Structure formats: C-alpha cells, structure tokens
Image (cartoon, rainbow, N blue to C red; front, side, top):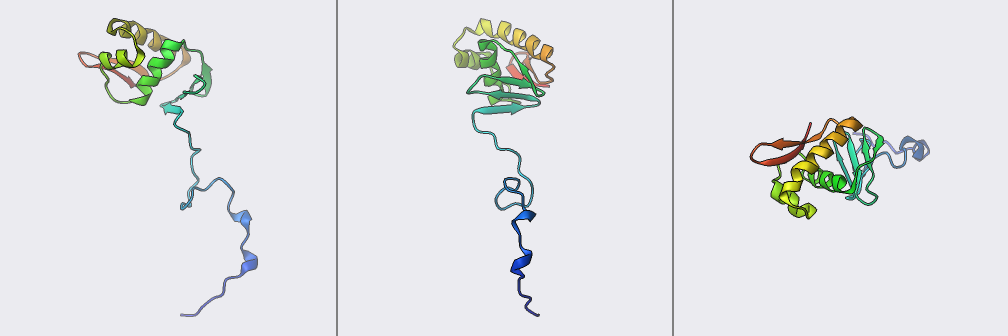
Length: 128
C-alpha cells in the first residue's frame, strides 16, 4: 500500500459552510431551539415572549389560553388529567373544560391542526 501525501493547497474552508454542519456529522443540522421554545405540529410557542405561531403566522391568544397551550405542549401526545392541568394553571377543575373549548376555537380559527382533545374519562391531549 502506497502512501499518498495530502495536498494542503487543495484543502479550503469553502467546502464546508460555517454553521450548517453539526459537530461530528456530515448532515446539515436543524436550527437548535432553546428550552424556552416549544414546537408541535405547526405550532411554535416562545415561552419567554409568549408569542405563538401557527404555521408561521402569528396568533393572538389570551394569557390563560397560552398557559394551557404551554402545559399541553410540554406533554404533547400524552393524556393529562384535568386535575393536573388545574394545578399547573392554578384554576379550578371546572374551569378547565371551558378554557380548553375556547382554546380549541382560537386555534381552529388560526388554522392549527393540533388541537386540545378531550379523552372521555381520562383528561386532555394535544392531538391532530
């Protein structure tokens, strides 16, 4: 086996675009979102600013709706009990049904596919 010396002149930084490759990988990386950004099926929520994007369009939600959406997005795809939601939002269990119904309407108007769904006898889940 022959040794072929490396041609230093042929190696340039132009072959690799800065910031497009993740360390140790040859595949482009997705932009990393911090822990303050939640993302689920077209809904993006920034927990620091409270802004909500639905399919890239800004959506205005009231504070209780944003809090419910954040709680459901943190546990997206999992069924959570109304009691757990009530303790997270510091409201009565009876208010969760009304809050979830109004959040569902607001998200439907914005064009979201993932909506809070009631699972009879178990609780709520953010699902499409």
